[in-house]
Structure formats: structure tokens, C-alpha cells
Length: 140
Image (cartoon, rainbow, N blue to C red; front, side, top):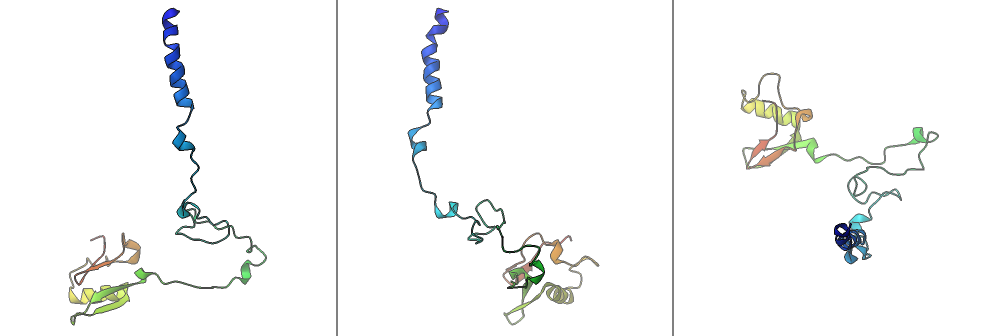
């Protein structure tokens, strides 16, 4: 019994150190602006709505009674909608992907396997133009 009593103060000290959080953890710090982004007022101030990427807005103005009256307010064309190809004169030709691929096939007929032309659904990344060469990932 006496031997176990020798360790009581050490155990008590360890329990106190574990139970009492450090003083610096208790300091009240104001959150930075990136921590306060949310969609509670319907506004998206950052990509995906908030820092957690919820992609949710609490819309209370749209319901079953007015849904059919909604109209397209704006639209945006992705930068990936068109790709570029360097022209022989050193310029750049911007066109839809199928037109650029058609031009590449005319220039280099054996570039792709028959029936396996690149398609936007097969992209693994954004097309990249480096030094006049168009790079994109295809199942060749």
C-alpha cells in the first residue's frame, strides 16, 4: 500500500496537466476573413460557397409555386470550351476542340487510332499549349 502511495502525487500532477488546457489555447482570437465566408445570406464569396466547399445556398425565394417562372439570368462559357492551335505564321487559332482535332488529323493522318479521336469527355486535365504544341490526355 505504501509503495502505491508514492506514485499518487505523480499521477495527480499528470492528471492536472492533462485536464487544464494550456493558457495560449484559451486566448480569444478573431477569425480571419477566409474563416467567415458562408452562404447564410445567399451570397457566395468564395469558390464552392464556403471554406468547407458545401456548394449550398439557403434559397427561400424559390419554391414550387414560382419555379416554372424562372428565367436564365446569365451564363458563362468555360475557358475549356475552345482550344488553340499555333498557325504556320506564328499566330494562334482558337476553335472548338473538334475543329482543332480535325485540323491535326489532316496535318498528321496517323496521329490517332481510327475511332479513338480525343473527346472532351476523355480529358483528364485542361488542354495545355506549350511552345506551339497542344498537349491533352487521350487513350492512345
